Length: 271
Image 1 (tube, rainbow, N blue to C red):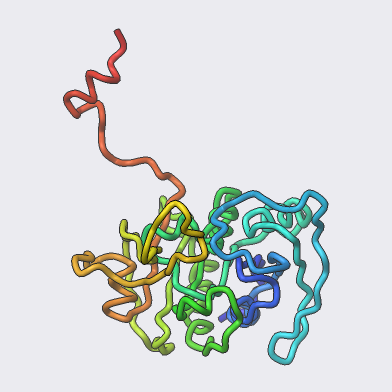
Image 2: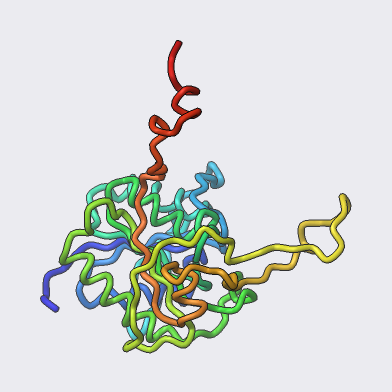
C-alpha cells in the first residue's frame, strides 16, 4: 500500500461507542484520513430515516482505538441524518469513500431496506460518494448491545475491500458495496460476488396473535429458505459460509418493459 492519504468518512447505526465502528477505523487508518461521525446512541433498524431531535448538534468525542486516540462526532439522530448533517458541516473534507459499519449483525436479503447501516451508505451514495456497508454475522441478541466479538477477520476483509475501492473506481451502475462477513470467517476466507435475495432473512412471528398482542411479544428468527437461490447473499453467508459482496445500485427501477407487455401497454396508452 502506498503512503497516499485518502479521505474516508466512517459512520454506523450502532452508535459512536461501538467496537464495530472502532474496527472500521482500524481497517482504513493505515492509508486514509478518517472523519468519524455516528449516532450518539443505538439506532439499529432505522433504514434511511431522516429523523432526529431538531436541537441535536454534533458533539465532539475522543475515542481510544487501539493505542491511538481519534476525534469523533456524535449526534442524536438516525444514521443517514447524522451523515448528511456532518457532510454539510464538514463540506471541506470531500471524502473519497463512506464506510458504514462494521455492524453487529449481518444485513441480508429483503431486510436491507430497514438497515441503518445500509441506509447510511445509501445517504453517502445519493450524495455522489462511493460507499461500503460492512456487517459481521452475530447472534440476534447482539444487535442492540456491544457484545464481545472477534473483529480481526472483518478488519482485514474491510481493509482489502476499502483499499481497492479507493484505488479503483466502482464498476458502472455500482453505488454501494454491501459486504457481509460470517462469524466463522478468517482473513483467508473466500469471497463471492452475490445478488440481493428477495427473501426475508429475518422473520418476526407471534405465538398467539391477536389484536391485543403487543409489538414486544414478536419473536425474531433468521435463516435461509430451503429453496434459496445459490447466487444470493443469503446463500453465500448462511449456507456456504463465505464472505458475501453485493453490488447495489441506487436505481431501483425494474427492468421489465411495460410497453411490450400486452394489457399493460394498453393501460398506459393515452386516449
